[in-house]
Image: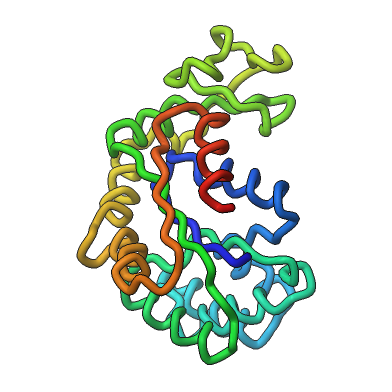
Length: 221
């Protein structure tokens, strides 16, 4: 089973991606990690990508998509993959769709996590990072994982905030891109929805992690 997952920053996409990975034993592929891996290994594509990144420019799709396809062909993807963080616009969806078909690789399911923009922002700003284990979930705006004051609800460790989680301007910029249904990330998701060639799953991201994951897993069957 091969999956694309879409969701706003703060929507729980990473958390649900890990649940899918653990449930089905598939690879969870984050587009940012692909860049870092190719650059650190000094691959030809990585060198080309770095030349754009060093200039503060976006890496062209002609470099990004072959890099992604190469990653999806690796051994750990044989049981399936979950691609997270790409595509980010409609044009990238079209190019990725064409490239997957040309490589005889199937895309089975597209998942869209739906969350109100203001709620997504609050969830980002409410995140608290446990200094003992950053995998311990704490969020002052989510009752199920609300910390005990400044203490981790799981282990009692000290909690900190990430500076970028408190930058409303940066959050707004990221959400402007995601929620744009004409040229942004939702336009990328709707490309697959409108074509109707793959199963398109929508998921309400408002409830707690457990409720969302149960609904997601039931819809993937």
